[in-house]
Image (cartoon, rainbow, N blue to C red):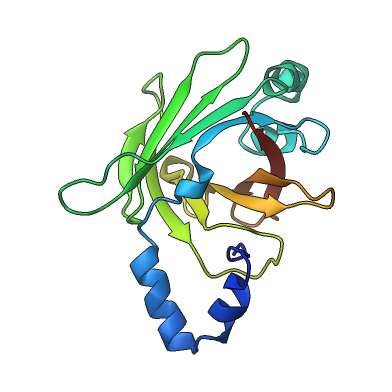
Length: 201
C-alpha cells in the first residue's frame, strides 16, 4: 500500500480516525479520480529507475533494453479525470508518449471491476481494473494513489502488473509524480520499478 496524502494536518487527522470510520471514508473516496494528479508530466531521468527489469520479467528479450532505455528518456504522461458517468463511477485517463513512439492511452473506471481487454495486436488478452487508495503508510506521499491493475490471466494464476501513481515529497523539497511499476509472478519476488515525473508548466 501507498501512503495517504500529507497535506497540512491531513495525515494526522486521518490517522486519528477509528479504523471502522477510516475504512468507511476510504470506500466513499475510493472511486473518485484524484484530480491532484491531472496535468502533463515529464520524466525525471536522474531520479527514475530503468524499466528493463520490469519488461524482462514479462519476457521481453534483454537485448531490447538499450532501445527501451532511449525511448523512456523522453516519456511524458498526460493525466485527466473525465466527467463521471450517469452511474456516478469516475474514471482516469493516462496518455503515455515518447519522442519516437505513438501515444498510448489507457482509460479505466475506478470501481475496481475487471474488464477484459486485448493488446494492440489482438493476440493477447488481459483483465484491466482501476482503483484509488487513500489510506497509506508512507509519510512522503502527498495525494491519493491511482492504481491500474492488469491481471495477465492467459499466463496463469498469480500473474499481474500494477501501476501506482501518486504525488510524493522528495528530499530536495519538490513534489513529483511517482509511478511505481509492480510485476507479480507466482513463485517469484515482485519486480518494482519507480519512475518520477516533474509537472510541465
